[in-house]
Length: 165
Image 1: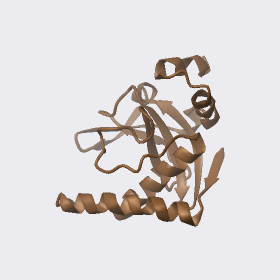
Image 2: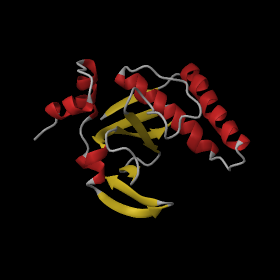
Image 3: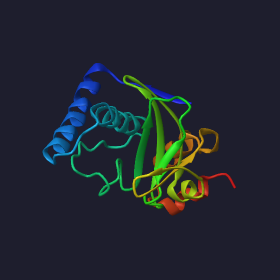
């Protein structure tokens, strides 16, 4: 399993993004989850670094823009055994990457497409829909995604050519 350890300067830089996100949530008069927003932003940065993708320091793009690139979403958890989870209304054309750990060290158990996740098992009711999960042992290796990005042909459709049959 791939692992990345962030430097104090990287953590400081991206933690500010998490704080900015929390402040925006407060301005909307909602109750933010401080740790989730800050750790989530740091996990997004760690994934961008591992995948050698540009990291956009973005605010107010929740559900309007992918976390990385055009179609890569990051899902993070402190739980080393966590499954990759999406909501039933998350885009099926996106790629979902699981990041586990806590600042400064993150592990990357793997990834799956939204379509593959939708074929998974609904594990709990979540607001307007179900939370769907795929266990780590059913994920594609992060190395296969790194290879695809390195040799990028541009679309998720082409991604299926590197997946095992």
